[in-house]
Amino acid sequence: MSNIHQFSSKDAIQAKASRWISAMDRGLSAQERQQFQRWVKENKAHQDAVFELAQLWDELSVLNELSSLFPNKHGINKPARKTTHFSIAASIFAALLIASFMFIGIEHWPSAPHEQAKYSKIYRTKVGEQATFVLPDSTIVQLNTNSLLEVAYTKSRRQLILTRGEGRFNVAKDAARPFTVMAGDKSFTALGTVFNVQRNAASDLELVVTEGKVMITDPSVAVNADDFVQLQNASNDTAKVKNINASIVISGEKAVIKESITKPITRLTQDDVQRDLAWQQGMLIFNGEPLSDALQEVSRYTATRFELADPRLASLKVAGVFKAGDIVGLLDSLRLNLAIEHERLGEHIVSLKQSDHG
Image 1 (tube, rainbow, N blue to C red):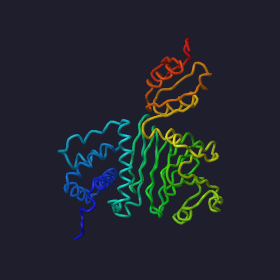
Image 2 (cartoon, rainbow, N blue to C red):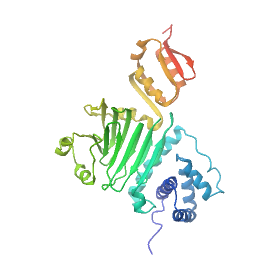
Image 3 (tube, rainbow, N blue to C red):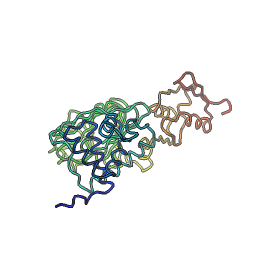
Image 4 (cartoon, rainbow, N blue to C red):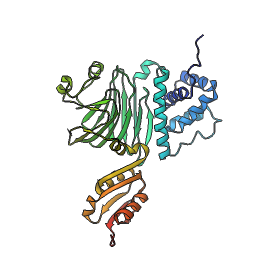
């Protein structure tokens, strides 16, 4: 008899629980419901892990499923409030989850292979909201404020469309199914990686790679499994990359696309990365950006809009760390550091002007 308990660590239990939670999100079959109930009853730690992870999940369908399976469990029929703490907790859990996947060699998704191959769903966040999702292949996606992501998996490829907003993609390795995020008029194909895509407009995009590398192409370029294998060790000097007019961006680099043109790729310092990706911890970091740019970034997280009474204010430099969506904190900082006063012209409009004593 095999040693069936050899991987019953906390990380292994959490990893298993995350796959069951995702399965509930897409809908359990009758057989899966029975398998899930057996697994939960094996150990109280299994049940605790499921209910703990469910509080971080974005879909009410999960909590409703748990309520029907375990009607006596208190506190599972109410969605958890969206707070920065949950975003941080989800990010930490995601890191633990990836480590446990690598360590224990978890088996495939609970459903049959032919069911796993075909998966489609739309994920979204509201203005000011951030959420973390685990996809069926164990890829982890973190969406920023006001984002819309369409996911479509087939047997031969994993294709996602970022219709608006920003997302961080921690991609599960699968050489047989390339992973591509389409945003505007560009495609970003992961070559074993963690990366961040921000869509400002159809022709204005930003890519930051924090692990591995990503290939930027036009959407018309389809990368199949054979291409993926050949491109694993590719660089911008590789003939195949040049032939398809692609760009390779590696860990610690940033690509900015303006009006559909990919600008020269830049190398980022650790501070640059922290500033660009601060949203993943619910924060915004400014280090000398013009006030107009800072206000535009702040507006992504709230319904509030800003008007400058004097156009010259637009070029003032802003520095500081702010909680995303904290308008009061921002206005206090502007008053104390730049002598900029504010006046509310309506529920969602704030006028900024230089103080008479500034």
